[in-house]
Image 1 (tube, rainbow, N blue to C red):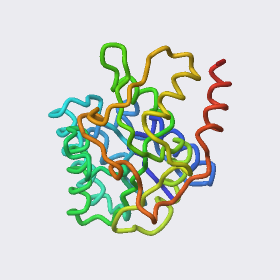
Image 2: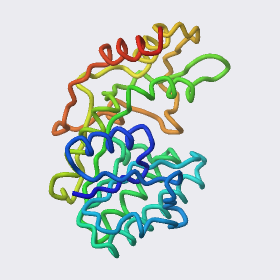
Image 3: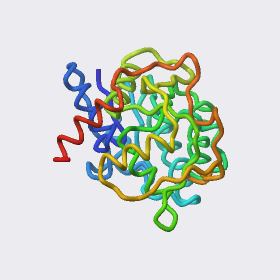
Image 4: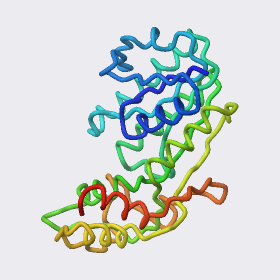
Length: 253
Protein backbone atom coordinates (compact mmCIF):
# COMPACT_ATOMS: atom_id res chain seq x y z
CA UNK A 1 0.00 0.00 0.00
CA UNK A 2 1.29 3.48 -0.85
CA UNK A 3 0.64 6.00 1.89
CA UNK A 4 1.62 9.67 1.58
CA UNK A 5 2.15 11.38 4.93
CA UNK A 6 1.69 15.16 4.76
CA UNK A 7 3.92 16.56 7.51
CA UNK A 8 5.92 13.35 7.33
CA UNK A 9 9.11 14.87 8.75
CA UNK A 10 7.50 16.18 11.96
CA UNK A 11 7.06 14.63 15.40
CA UNK A 12 4.14 12.35 14.51
CA UNK A 13 4.82 12.11 10.79
CA UNK A 14 8.36 10.79 11.11
CA UNK A 15 7.25 8.13 13.60
CA UNK A 16 4.34 7.17 11.35
CA UNK A 17 6.50 6.86 8.22
CA UNK A 18 8.94 4.65 10.12
CA UNK A 19 6.12 2.42 11.41
CA UNK A 20 4.44 2.03 8.03
CA UNK A 21 7.70 1.27 6.24
CA UNK A 22 8.51 -1.29 8.92
CA UNK A 23 5.28 -3.10 8.06
CA UNK A 24 6.18 -3.29 4.37
CA UNK A 25 4.19 -0.34 3.06
CA UNK A 26 5.47 2.40 0.78
CA UNK A 27 5.41 5.42 3.08
CA UNK A 28 6.24 8.80 1.55
CA UNK A 29 7.14 11.73 3.81
CA UNK A 30 5.73 14.83 2.12
CA UNK A 31 6.73 18.25 3.47
CA UNK A 32 8.23 21.51 2.21
CA UNK A 33 11.69 20.01 2.73
CA UNK A 34 10.81 17.25 0.24
CA UNK A 35 9.31 19.69 -2.27
CA UNK A 36 5.65 19.36 -1.25
CA UNK A 37 3.96 22.58 -0.16
CA UNK A 38 0.28 22.16 0.63
CA UNK A 39 -0.27 25.93 0.91
CA UNK A 40 0.79 26.61 -2.67
CA UNK A 41 0.03 23.13 -3.95
CA UNK A 42 3.58 22.75 -5.24
CA UNK A 43 4.57 19.09 -5.62
CA UNK A 44 1.31 17.80 -4.13
CA UNK A 45 -0.17 16.23 -7.26
CA UNK A 46 3.11 14.49 -8.04
CA UNK A 47 3.43 13.11 -4.52
CA UNK A 48 -0.08 11.62 -4.61
CA UNK A 49 0.30 9.71 -7.87
CA UNK A 50 -0.59 6.08 -7.16
CA UNK A 51 -1.35 6.73 -3.49
CA UNK A 52 -3.94 4.58 -1.74
CA UNK A 53 -4.09 6.73 1.39
CA UNK A 54 -3.07 10.27 2.29
CA UNK A 55 -2.47 11.12 5.94
CA UNK A 56 -2.40 14.76 7.08
CA UNK A 57 -0.44 15.30 10.28
CA UNK A 58 0.88 18.72 9.26
CA UNK A 59 0.69 21.82 11.42
CA UNK A 60 0.74 25.55 10.82
CA UNK A 61 4.13 27.28 11.10
CA UNK A 62 2.33 30.17 12.82
CA UNK A 63 -0.33 30.01 15.55
CA UNK A 64 -1.45 33.62 15.00
CA UNK A 65 -5.23 33.54 14.54
CA UNK A 66 -5.43 34.60 10.89
CA UNK A 67 -2.33 32.71 9.80
CA UNK A 68 -3.35 29.39 11.36
CA UNK A 69 -6.87 29.63 9.94
CA UNK A 70 -5.51 30.41 6.49
CA UNK A 71 -3.09 27.48 6.76
CA UNK A 72 -5.65 24.83 7.62
CA UNK A 73 -8.31 26.13 5.21
CA UNK A 74 -5.96 26.41 2.24
CA UNK A 75 -3.87 23.33 2.95
CA UNK A 76 -6.88 21.10 3.54
CA UNK A 77 -8.66 22.32 0.43
CA UNK A 78 -5.56 21.67 -1.67
CA UNK A 79 -5.09 18.19 -0.20
CA UNK A 80 -8.74 17.28 -0.80
CA UNK A 81 -8.63 18.46 -4.42
CA UNK A 82 -5.31 16.77 -5.21
CA UNK A 83 -6.33 13.53 -3.49
CA UNK A 84 -9.62 13.38 -5.38
CA UNK A 85 -7.84 14.01 -8.70
CA UNK A 86 -5.35 11.24 -7.90
CA UNK A 87 -8.07 8.75 -7.00
CA UNK A 88 -6.93 8.39 -3.39
CA UNK A 89 -9.37 6.20 -1.49
CA UNK A 90 -8.86 7.37 2.09
CA UNK A 91 -7.89 10.61 3.82
CA UNK A 92 -6.78 10.42 7.45
CA UNK A 93 -6.35 13.66 9.40
CA UNK A 94 -4.96 14.16 12.88
CA UNK A 95 -6.85 16.56 15.13
CA UNK A 96 -7.37 17.17 18.86
CA UNK A 97 -9.83 15.78 21.39
CA UNK A 98 -12.20 18.55 22.47
CA UNK A 99 -11.58 20.74 19.44
CA UNK A 100 -15.27 21.68 19.19
CA UNK A 101 -15.23 22.74 22.86
CA UNK A 102 -12.23 25.05 22.37
CA UNK A 103 -13.69 27.53 19.89
CA UNK A 104 -12.50 30.52 21.96
CA UNK A 105 -8.99 29.67 20.74
CA UNK A 106 -7.91 30.85 17.29
CA UNK A 107 -5.86 27.68 16.81
CA UNK A 108 -8.78 25.40 17.59
CA UNK A 109 -11.17 27.43 15.44
CA UNK A 110 -8.76 26.63 12.62
CA UNK A 111 -8.86 22.93 13.47
CA UNK A 112 -12.67 23.09 13.53
CA UNK A 113 -12.55 24.59 10.02
CA UNK A 114 -10.18 21.83 8.88
CA UNK A 115 -12.47 19.09 10.19
CA UNK A 116 -15.51 20.73 8.61
CA UNK A 117 -13.88 20.84 5.17
CA UNK A 118 -13.02 17.15 5.41
CA UNK A 119 -16.54 16.18 6.49
CA UNK A 120 -18.13 18.27 3.75
CA UNK A 121 -15.87 16.85 1.04
CA UNK A 122 -16.45 13.80 -1.15
CA UNK A 123 -13.32 11.90 -0.13
CA UNK A 124 -13.72 8.90 2.21
CA UNK A 125 -12.10 9.98 5.47
CA UNK A 126 -11.19 9.26 9.08
CA UNK A 127 -10.39 11.95 11.66
CA UNK A 128 -8.19 10.85 14.55
CA UNK A 129 -8.57 13.17 17.53
CA UNK A 130 -5.78 12.75 20.07
CA UNK A 131 -5.36 14.25 23.52
CA UNK A 132 -2.35 16.41 24.39
CA UNK A 133 1.02 14.77 23.79
CA UNK A 134 3.40 14.04 26.67
CA UNK A 135 6.01 15.78 24.52
CA UNK A 136 4.06 19.05 24.69
CA UNK A 137 3.70 19.36 28.48
CA UNK A 138 6.69 21.72 28.65
CA UNK A 139 5.28 23.79 25.77
CA UNK A 140 1.95 24.06 27.58
CA UNK A 141 3.85 25.43 30.58
CA UNK A 142 5.68 27.95 28.40
CA UNK A 143 2.45 29.18 26.81
CA UNK A 144 0.86 29.59 30.25
CA UNK A 145 3.78 31.50 31.83
CA UNK A 146 2.99 35.06 32.91
CA UNK A 147 5.67 37.10 34.71
CA UNK A 148 7.61 33.96 35.58
CA UNK A 149 4.62 32.03 36.95
CA UNK A 150 2.84 29.21 35.11
CA UNK A 151 -0.91 29.80 35.46
CA UNK A 152 -3.09 26.79 34.67
CA UNK A 153 -6.57 25.59 35.47
CA UNK A 154 -7.17 22.40 37.46
CA UNK A 155 -8.88 20.87 34.44
CA UNK A 156 -8.65 17.12 33.90
CA UNK A 157 -6.84 15.82 30.84
CA UNK A 158 -5.55 12.48 29.62
CA UNK A 159 -2.28 13.01 27.72
CA UNK A 160 -0.70 10.48 25.39
CA UNK A 161 2.77 9.63 24.04
CA UNK A 162 3.49 10.75 20.48
CA UNK A 163 4.58 7.20 19.61
CA UNK A 164 1.12 5.95 20.58
CA UNK A 165 -0.53 8.67 18.50
CA UNK A 166 1.51 7.58 15.47
CA UNK A 167 0.47 3.97 16.10
CA UNK A 168 -3.22 4.90 16.24
CA UNK A 169 -2.99 6.99 13.07
CA UNK A 170 -1.19 4.13 11.34
CA UNK A 171 -3.84 1.57 12.27
CA UNK A 172 -6.55 3.96 11.07
CA UNK A 173 -4.74 4.57 7.77
CA UNK A 174 -4.54 0.85 7.07
CA UNK A 175 -8.22 0.28 7.81
CA UNK A 176 -11.41 1.23 6.02
CA UNK A 177 -12.49 4.89 6.18
CA UNK A 178 -14.47 5.58 9.34
CA UNK A 179 -16.47 8.47 7.92
CA UNK A 180 -16.23 10.11 11.34
CA UNK A 181 -13.98 10.57 14.33
CA UNK A 182 -11.81 8.21 16.37
CA UNK A 183 -10.57 9.46 19.76
CA UNK A 184 -7.28 8.28 21.26
CA UNK A 185 -5.94 9.11 24.71
CA UNK A 186 -3.40 8.08 27.28
CA UNK A 187 -4.24 5.50 29.95
CA UNK A 188 -4.37 7.88 32.93
CA UNK A 189 -6.20 11.08 33.79
CA UNK A 190 -4.43 13.99 35.53
CA UNK A 191 -5.10 17.55 36.56
CA UNK A 192 -3.44 19.88 34.09
CA UNK A 193 -1.86 22.11 36.73
CA UNK A 194 -0.61 19.19 38.83
CA UNK A 195 1.02 17.28 35.99
CA UNK A 196 2.80 20.38 34.70
CA UNK A 197 3.97 21.16 38.25
CA UNK A 198 5.34 17.61 38.61
CA UNK A 199 7.04 17.66 35.23
CA UNK A 200 8.74 21.01 35.79
CA UNK A 201 9.97 19.93 39.22
CA UNK A 202 11.46 16.74 37.78
CA UNK A 203 13.31 18.78 35.17
CA UNK A 204 14.62 21.20 37.78
CA UNK A 205 12.59 24.07 36.32
CA UNK A 206 12.10 26.65 39.13
CA UNK A 207 8.92 28.23 37.77
CA UNK A 208 6.01 28.03 40.22
CA UNK A 209 2.69 26.69 38.94
CA UNK A 210 -0.35 28.62 40.18
CA UNK A 211 -3.77 27.01 40.02
CA UNK A 212 -6.07 29.54 38.38
CA UNK A 213 -9.59 28.54 37.25
CA UNK A 214 -9.64 31.58 34.93
CA UNK A 215 -6.35 30.71 33.24
CA UNK A 216 -6.80 30.20 29.53
CA UNK A 217 -5.52 27.27 27.53
CA UNK A 218 -4.25 28.78 24.26
CA UNK A 219 -7.01 31.38 24.59
CA UNK A 220 -9.83 29.12 25.79
CA UNK A 221 -11.32 28.66 29.25
CA UNK A 222 -11.41 25.07 30.47
CA UNK A 223 -13.96 23.12 32.46
CA UNK A 224 -14.21 19.53 33.69
CA UNK A 225 -15.05 18.21 30.23
CA UNK A 226 -13.12 20.36 27.74
CA UNK A 227 -10.00 18.24 27.27
CA UNK A 228 -11.16 14.75 28.20
CA UNK A 229 -12.12 12.07 25.67
CA UNK A 230 -15.46 10.30 25.48
CA UNK A 231 -16.17 6.83 26.86
CA UNK A 232 -15.44 5.13 23.54
CA UNK A 233 -11.91 6.52 23.18
CA UNK A 234 -9.08 4.11 22.41
CA UNK A 235 -6.63 4.11 25.31
CA UNK A 236 -2.88 3.76 24.74
CA UNK A 237 -0.59 1.79 27.05
CA UNK A 238 2.31 4.15 27.68
CA UNK A 239 2.08 5.80 31.09
CA UNK A 240 3.42 9.28 31.69
CA UNK A 241 5.88 8.20 34.38
CA UNK A 242 7.35 5.53 32.09
CA UNK A 243 7.68 7.98 29.20
CA UNK A 244 9.21 10.54 31.55
CA UNK A 245 11.77 8.06 32.88
CA UNK A 246 12.85 7.03 29.38
CA UNK A 247 13.01 10.51 27.88
CA UNK A 248 14.67 11.92 30.99
CA UNK A 249 17.40 9.31 30.80
CA UNK A 250 17.87 9.96 27.08
CA UNK A 251 18.31 13.65 27.78
CA UNK A 252 20.82 13.00 30.54
CA UNK A 253 18.53 14.25 33.29
